[in-house]
Length: 207
Length: 212
Image (cartoon, rainbow over the protein chains, first blue to last red):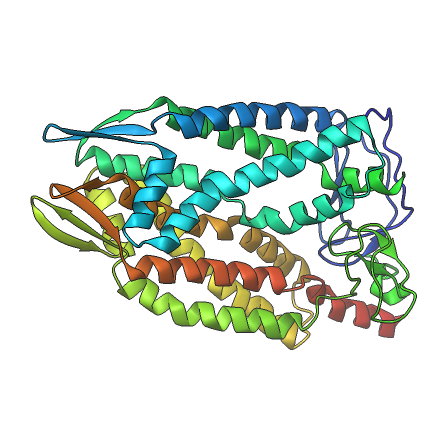
């Protein structure tokens, strides 16, 4: 995590997208290495990025805790006021027998982010305490397979579209939870962007 | 591209699909990565067949996804059913044209282009075409990057349905079109994931070997 310079542990890498064999070169901080045949990203050198990933993940946890406890919004239609939190929203969908949608919302806003944060935090924290844990490769594999299905940023855009549609039907008061969920999503995206998987794999194999 | 360039496959080396480690397998076809333990394969197994199956299923479900309503709004003003297209028209007329544009791109442009792009990639890979490999790789990268954004409309329906429950004043209920649409997005994501972009470059590899 605190290596002064990037030392590739493998002397050959193959491009993920075109399979071209290449020799890694030293990169400046923040630099990307691109495949010389197809321009695909090969690897990047991001000094300190794992510390940043840890900071972003911890911030996301705090935001998430606020996000699930407080109301997302209050709606007023003809004097009728209701407030809903993330949890009551999911519960309501489930009670209407809209099980697919209830599961979809619960998975994207609660289950997957919590899982992704838990996996990232346990990898990052255990690397600090005891670098040789044997279960780290399994967690990294899980994270690689799970990543494409994590859609928090799309969910947040969905909230914005839904708010515009609702604004024509009712008076809306946006609750504190909506802002913190938005913050959680931004921090989660930042954390997973800083979570340099290839670099972590190299750390795992050098132990 | 230099003619001397060579792939891992040409050297009998396998690049791990999960962690990227390049290694020489002990026995052909039966090996696992020494670093992460995943099964080692030179190319994704039956990539074209599996990706085509997902794509075909996505094409079929694309029809009900657009024809059937995705949600039903019930209010004091009456009952209204919305399809994907009518939802965009509504946003446009209600003055939020930037959002109408976002939803239009995410729900109409992206899914259609994605289905067409995957069709092109699969057909050219099947016939081992050497046509513009760089451009096709970039197309694949674009499909992988933007494909997930089509889930937007499904989320909008689910969020509205979860929030708007004021019996009997106003209720929003999801309808089957949204489920079909979500299935189209998931199936086309699976199609892109099972497609192996290395297949785009394999014909070029063969050519440079025969010329050498």
